[in-house]
Image 1: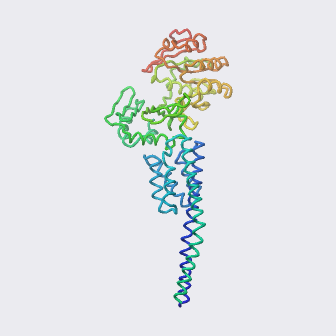
Image 2: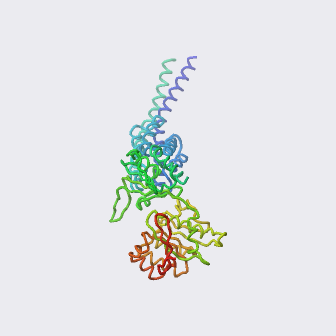
Image 3: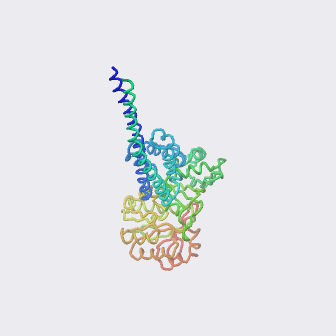
Length: 170
Length: 296
């Protein structure tokens, strides 16, 4: 029975460590998703053929969960609301922030993409999105370094913690 | 209900204020929205409403007409108007952005004039005896703004492009050079108003260049063009008329006499380019003049 309990504790601590370390990888993945989305938006604006709503819908279809949800909601809101695209984007991104693995600073940068969105010229939109993309790239590099540094360590610590608790119990 | 396609573009409170009048008075031609001012509707009978067009409504209206996508409409904003579904035209004024001496765009959009496009099929029938005599004749329609010149032109295009079996008019290749998107009311290149089945439309293109492009590439039998007046227009007109194309055009003026004050129109008259001149007044009364400006 003691052995069974020890194995259970070991598995549980390894799982906790694994899921904690996964958060770091998830942050990198989600920042990349937003980078892809904003690149798509930039190219859509550059061609000037699609409205913001259509562009947001096609981005929502093209990118993976969970970032796609923000673009899907954004498209829905654009079709129904009298508010500006920037206001709508800010509301949606902070609503969605709880479902994302992004840090507050990452969300703030994503929010910046909405500033004057759809209200300025092609050139101004492109400049702003390029700035956001550069900032996101920096955040992604930082997140990747953090992942490399901490995720292995968290996994090892959780394994060691599990083994130590199991030994103490036995 | 020609204004039906305008409804989705109006902010809710503006819509509440204007819709009863739009329903009751089918003659309303324009809805004028000025930020901070009372809403105005004009037509034969003008209306000034007690409702103001607020800053909040202005913002909502801009979001709606641009579909949150100003980047798509830079060229239209530079020209000062945009066309919406149904062929209605929204004139825009605000703050012009000047780059290298030319208008690059428009910002702080604050004044709007929604011109309700109305098709009046059959409006040009009374002109047919002068315009069609074993073939289409060249004609210049002269009239002040809101006299219905464009409506007549659109109906002429429809009759030319579709034909009129009852009157023995076969459909011909008609081409419209629609610099201000008023004749065909094109949206994404597709006419929103009936301009005929054999009619080609060159939308938002400068008239003189457009006329030359149509002559070279579309071999029209009838060329339709709105509001001529520049020196280049006369040259393109002369090209078309000498190529045997019937040109039907309009010009802004209260009378033929007034139109002749413009050197271009005087030159056109002296060159004998048009067969007929037609004066239209705000009461839609027509005066048909021959080449020698004699009343028929």
